[in-house]
Image (cartoon, rainbow, N blue to C red):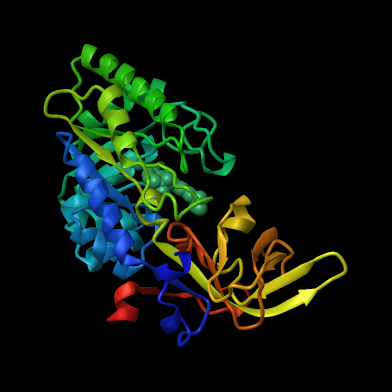
Length: 388
Ligand code: LLP
């Protein structure tokens, strides 16, 4: 069954390593999201482009009617090129350069997620110079911890992201007194790869408290943006190819009290694209050492850095072998001892030339690739490239 997921014959002709995106699964995932968001009044999804900006993947997401969440001028440009309406693009990031702010203003993006007072001042100045008004939303650090990897939690007071809760009224008042910005919302994000719905409950409760506080002072907020963070099943992508969007959106519908007419924005990245993408590699050599055997593949940490950087687990499959299972360390060709995909991994008996895929690599895979060791960046193919 698993092997049937891939057009193996077509893989044989393509130089490895490369990314393969199963666009049938992507479209099913997008349909599942739309089905759930359409049940709730005022829910909008802005796909977090940082997860994967492959142009063909972006086009499917745009065609599904989603907006985009960008964190750089490059991402804004990639979205405009893919046909996303500028009015559906939001722009976040702790360090926006002047040219990126200008690009956002020129394109007419929906709003800037602002992360500091100095940034607010610069946006106001640039907008004034351009004769425009920037719509701004403030990223508030909700001091909510998420149960995930320490490197990818972002909502705690000690993180570099956002404005402290105690400064919230002050920054809103500042924005209201400035001539070229208009205050349109609040933005939150607590972390990534979150599978514990209670973390989103905690965030919802915090948002309710902050809204009560603002409403008591007569401040109304047009848009609430709760960021992204919904996780996926890395251990068993075949069992759970589509994340549990129903629980995710229902959690917010139950706990986050929207005011009449208010919009709730989401910035899911991983949950949208992770399961549809795989890194496809080829076994170069099987090397037997005293106590171990290594499968050395032609893809490495330059192509998929998550195992080296976060100790992340990706399911590995030899899709061209049915030989009895054996135990291997699966490693890449890079001159770094951290270039390891998995240790003591059990998979079908492997020989030179076999195709080995790293599953659940659609998010933070291709986009985080580097040219270290002067390696070419991996190409990305979608189903229609291979099957016509
Ligand atoms: N919104 C904001 C403000 C974010 O910082 C992020 C992710 C997202 C949305 C999308 O989060 P998602 O739905 O994908 O969890 N490279 C790491 C993940 C870094 C996530 C950074 N921020 C990894 O490979 O696991």
